[in-house]
Image 1 (tube, rainbow, N blue to C red):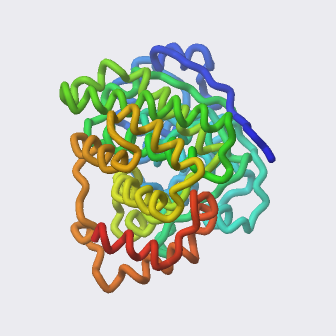
Image 2 (image 1 turned 45 degrees about the vertical axis):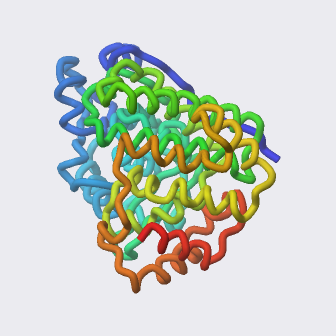
Length: 371
């Protein structure tokens, strides 16, 4: 059994300018980012790189359509490195672009082409949620199939991952909250995964300890408190990414995909809808093993009992982000069973990481309780 791996070299800088100087960014670099990040943090460096602003190709989550349009526009550019500076959308796009001979990203997701790395990849996250800078996974909405697909392969892992707390400053609170909740879910799902090891669980626990303590302070002092803990939160997101990069995530992510694919709900917000309900079902179905240990550890932080811990976490998270009924996103009652069946068919990559097996009836029950 493989216990642990980290493919990327980790680096830390106080500012983007320090990173740009240390990595000698120049004309052989393709920077994929957003204009709202470029203007305050990159423009003053007057870099000779080629810049692509992701939002010019569409808003929201990455899609095969968005990726292919960018791919077509950069076809004539000569570059050796891809520098991804952004959130999950920018990072997931950039990971695919390291592949040799890529003309349609669907060919990569379907593994119709050999996955050969042709460019170096440097990832600089600007949110505190995805942890994607240290994972080998890229996820996109496949519009023609009305679902999301994931590609997991070491070929698309970053060569270098860069932590710059300065880049969190401009993140609006709602996006901060959704991304940080996503990081919490990464840490907790990875902890109970059958693939977890003592090494990955160490990173899981380090991540949730930081995140929950910051969330408690935000609930007490208000959203502005987050600026006091930017470095800690982006590091916690990174720890959670290392944990789930090794152990994987499970049903929470699997159940969220139809919500994102059909109703374009942002990834972190979609995961938030299912998080505590999935873990309550885990507790009911298999109240033994590592979930006992997990519940006790979380209960100590939340000052409650293991039986009530996920209810308490739900209450805490509600101070950061409202949880809406699924019907408010557009889900219809008659679609619920079909979504559950679709998850069982299309998300086995994730469901294999569940703490305990969930049936299609279990999944339908979760959807209906949240409907």
